[in-house]
Length: 443
Image (cartoon, rainbow, N blue to C red; front, side):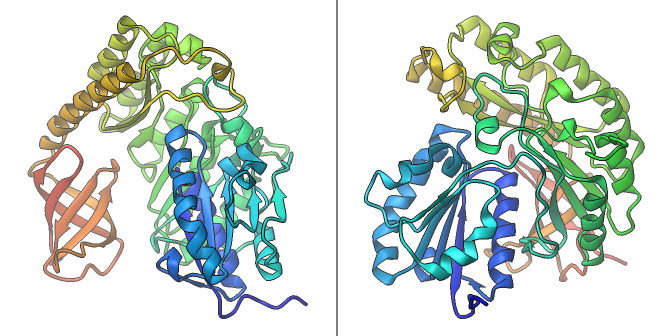
């Protein structure tokens, strides 16, 4: 039997989204089950794992810069260094092109190899990026939760949409769905451990279909998770508007445990840009879904992704994106300049919007959204919100931070230590990116 990893420390640097964060929690759980312990800094660890994102060029630039700074000190102390995740899948052996001391490069779906690779300690020998066509279940209990009260639960992986700009199908593969019963088993286990918020994850989560004979979808899953004792808040992401159905919207509305919050990426407000992106919906179709959601749940908080400077985007097309922001008035957005990604259809054509134009458009989007959020947040003044505690404010002995049901960041003060995951906070101040308040102390 192979020796375990007792006495070794590990550090994981995560680039990217919630799916990557969940993968990092899985890797951490796998290493700790073998005896490794978490280090606070890469410089103090025996194992360094860099979990990567390839959705934006800037994330890759940060990754390669980080690896350059990490390489020499890690080599000097004999640390095992590996790169995993989406960029590992897409770039593969490109990581050996520069003089970096790497032990392994693993695509998604191969993280179970890490303990044996660490034990072997052979630099530059392991690159595994093959894809699995069927769902592979992660071992039960082999996930290290970063938050004691909130947990990610993966329900599907991959994407079949092949939007013209998006690398996800090439990084994560085609859609694979987790069995309905296994999802509920994990959620029951998490609730038994005190987890109160469940975040259902997938690259195209509303396309979920149980691979069993019944073929139950996301709406039925929301019903089933809502029935689980101990679960109090439910979220799900990421949704694609093309496959977001009225059935799912109605399931959200009838299950009060499902948070009145949804991330529904729109990318552009222009029909012609959306068509070139291959998104499968137009501006009016998107607005119809927003209207339906708000008719069912008037208090729902919506967020979205926005791309500016997509190939061929004119001033008039960009103006349609600004007008969409004004019309929908999102609670939050994630906005980016277009960058060509490998293997995508858009990367085969010209990236013809000048960099300075992209920069100006991104600035305009972010300025408008900042003003919208500042105005919306002022409406919360004087209200009392339920907040899920996330942790302490290290700069304030009485300070804590959390998130509301609408996913707003809430920084608050409390005269006593909160005893549980949920607290009531009266909002006393606001800014464009967060709310401030005072905890309503229990009687």
